[in-house]
Image (tube, rainbow, N blue to C red; front, side, top):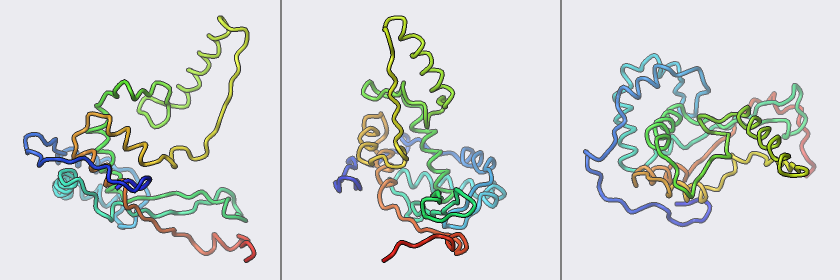
Length: 227
């Protein structure tokens, strides 16, 4: 189900033949587990250090679990539960605006995301309708440096054929955090993805839940608005 429109956007699929399914291998899972860095733990209380230490034992069952998730185009509800931790922007916050919300999902969810992107999305070439030549964020070869270099190149080249150049700069607050799922899934449908992977993405973006965890001491100085 599409959360934005309330309509079913999944694709009708036929049973996937084992020879047509691109399996996630035990070695791929082991390589990710063995290279996990210290990171925040999600609501499942499975820390990264534990998964890394037990990688030789966990890689095979986790590979089976990830493959079953893809084959059935379903994502466990526990993987879609996020924990939001407010991080102080200043030493003595007085308002809610002085906190930055950090959403933490389970480590297993992040591993599954990485596998899907690496195995199915990254190798694809976008169709003509989807071009990302002017996007520098959230891309393997993109960076703020690349964006500045490109902008400087354009600004120094335009005056050769124009009398003057006007630059209008806009800043969208949390733009990538407020992307409509319907627009994202519509773009994903244009890619040459197997139907079971696309449907997995649809299921992944639906039914998310979250809770907020904070210490009382962090909120003591906040002034509540009058009722």
